[in-house]
Image 1: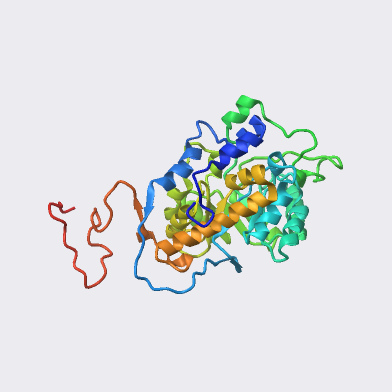
Image 2: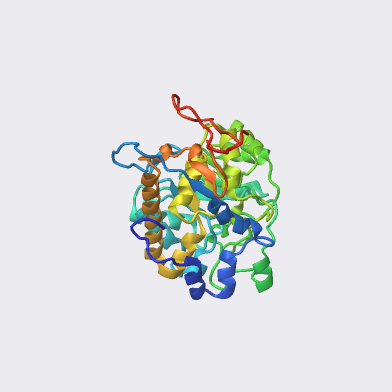
Length: 387
């Protein structure tokens, strides 16, 4: 990071690995197949550079963004991840309090080891106005989905994040190698307890199945909460989703845990943002580790970005304080990057500031002369060939 919390290079994942059981670390860290998509999420950001603008004037920086009618202090949220009590005994309530204290909205996972009502209550302890959304996998039995939605509404969640990239489970190589298929005794996916079709006091598995647009339409009839579709990579799916009344999209490849051949989230982002054309907010997660990653995503069309594994590493190594510090440092890092790019608001970051590392960029490339400010004639460099 480049903010005030910066210091010598550190390895949050390595620090967490030293704290966790090997199979639990691998569950959090691992991806599908050969983990190509997992690696590419971070590597794709590293292949991009930011062109700073200069002499843009001063003024106070304001990192707020508006998402679904609420002002967020920064373009950052906590993405849904499962089983926080594997990382730390305080689990999701610690994450919720930390996120609220840092001014960062939280998407609590359907596979949380703490029920949604308790997660929201923990967040509201730290900030009565904390934004908490609920991640939802549509279930084959409509009555199960309906009960989950009702619980999220009663808990005070302000949106449903419907994960749609999981018609089947991804093949998680590390989990298969470790034989990690279930939680240790005493832990469970608490949102799945006491649902229709199971004996009182017991839980049921989260079903992965190929839901369709009609299932999403039935969900829309069931609730007045905004629907955020997570796992969209194809621009045509984005267009259809918006046409069908979805309120926001999350460009995501599920942290590289589903289709290993999927592109990095940031590579899919520009086409999705273009397809949406500003009609709904476009969010992104996958590979975000620093302020420059946030800035790149915003410049390419995202309204805000989510972080998942960095929160788990901070939770494993520092508990609630660790998560709060990590999120605060990430916010500070982004604010400094914004200033260095010549901006005072997130909206000041634009696509023409993003270039590929190691390649010529406009006006010294295939689009030479395009975007040159009016009144400044483009003159090729000595020896430059016309494109």
